[in-house]
Image 1 (cartoon, one colour):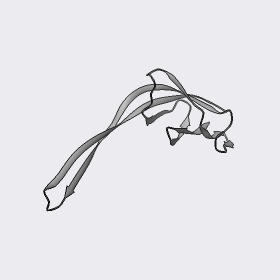
Image 2: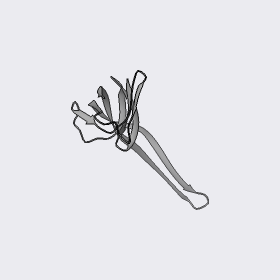
Image 3: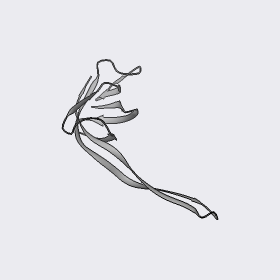
Image 4: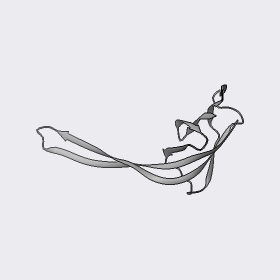
Amino acid sequence: MYAIVEIGGQQFKVENKAKVFVNKMDAEEGSTVDFDRVLLIDNEGDVKVGQPVVKGAKVSAKVVAHVKGDKVKVFKKKRRKGYKVLNGHRQQYTQIEIENITA
């Protein structure tokens, strides 16, 4: 069984016991969060497609940790002008573990 869920404006394919990295959420580590924007559910061939969401469907997940992604270097340069700037960025993510998918 899997579901397509909208979390923070992005769509994720989730299954039971799967760990997913989503954009940082305001939730404590170890707490449970519920997502009701379920767009599709596939239960071993029985597919339910929402218009835009599946009524009564819910995905519950546990917040595992708040982590940072890999560093991305942003380098800007204008040739022959002596201008160069190097910046770094690390995106913050929340790791969640899917506990239950209810249709």
